[in-house]
Length: 579
Image (cartoon, rainbow, N blue to C red; front, side, top):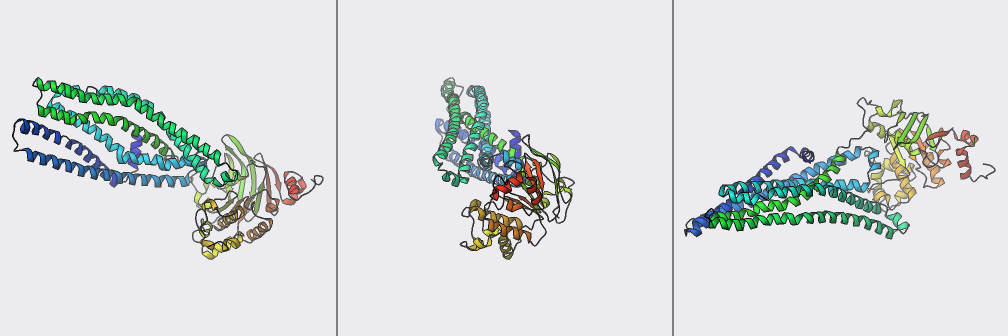
């Protein structure tokens, strides 16, 4: 846990370090101030009430009032300071985590669900903030109050003090046992929270699918199960705490009983004055209350530790796909692509197996094949979303691992079948990759993607806000806006992964014509199943089980009478005899 606390400290601003230390010093000082009133109470009982001397009474009461007001004022400043430091710290952490997510490998998102990542960015981070704002000063407060009270009471009557604190070792044993059992339960509860958040996130993101298949009741039941599991994990923790709480409460109350019984005997025996007993009565809570706080503090510490470990896992997750130390600075990308004996494994399963081909600048390469044959993986390797397990992927004759990532990906425009549009205007979505575009340029690229006609019919034209993920648009409309976004960066390599699968044949022909007439030189990498999308390509590759089963032009592959020809025949309604 100490390394987690140090991590939080390292993520605080230097000025907050100073303020936080001052706040903790104030915590120690105000804990010491608690001894003033019991000390004055002793004088009031012995020197005023017992002695019958009222002269110092007003002065003593004034000192008590000033100390009380001063302590509360200092505590108010301390709490405000702690809260400000915690908010600054979590602000820094949230900014760093979000920045890290921008450069995190795709494999991280493959392995972690969105709901889990959001839990780390929200609930887990809030427990980190809670430690800085509350838990640390409560620990300091409990320790200081207990120690100061023990020291002062020992100076008053060491025998009675020893009797009062003799229960402390027993409490420490109970606390140790409780701590051992509580941590795994907090880990389990946190996992259940993540599962519940994931279920909610998936349902919200896929609400149209849920309604389309009339699965509302199923989704309600699925969420209910996760909600129930989260509740049960909470109850398990509470039950464990309640099984230990009576022992802590009995030990705390034992201090009160010892104080009353033994303190009374000491007065009878002449070893204690009534004023001194009043001091023990006033400070007995200072011995018992930290014991009561111990369980709550342990709960909070374990929750903090569990949450901090999850946040730190993401914080210290260093991407493997980064700029190489000897990465080369390039000018504008020419667009020459070469796959040289490339293989790729995903979770020990070979997805791409010994693939080699070359595409010259300005040419078009098309890739087709059965589902799962590795088509999209080729795109991911080209843009270095993943690195090849074997072989080399070269752009302009340079291994992509020697390119600076920003330059490599900045030279590639990508439009996929699974379109993601932001909650922004049409203009904002099209100009997402090139913020310097003028409205006229945005309109030009939108027109080339066959999107201009329907965009101009929207309620506010290019200023129309598109809903999350393009809600409100048809599949073909979303694909066309995504294509406009891809060509708007004026890429040297344009990647289209089934980009026109949801548009009609006439629109597809128009788009292909516009792509041939782009005002900049561009190598096109097309992944498709429609023969019409790829028949004019300079090179067509047919993948099967991660390997290139066929390659050539449209005419060559039709003559081969393989998978490509069969697909061509089916899409053109040719008879089985002709096939």
